[in-house]
Image (cartoon, rainbow, N blue to C red; front, side):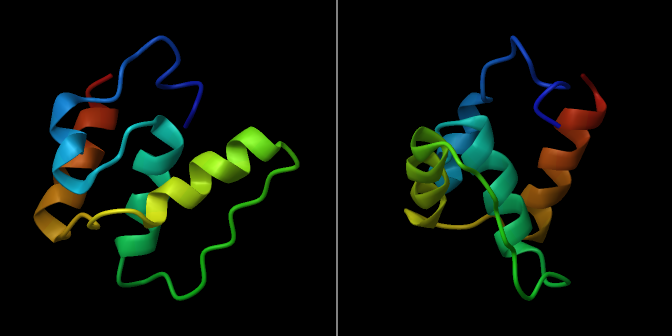
Length: 76
């Protein structure tokens, strides 16, 4: 997924659920999905860990927003 968004900015509307990076955008999608019961992000990079922790700040996208997120990625 990160390759797909390389060079792209996080869309402005991601601020509605307080995602400020692609890592947070993707992780908030996973965390909010009803089919997911135990997301396990993995990294050995402390900067990525800090960014991942930022996904727990603010709200999570609802079903309508998750569809918008998917549509955005599919349109790249």
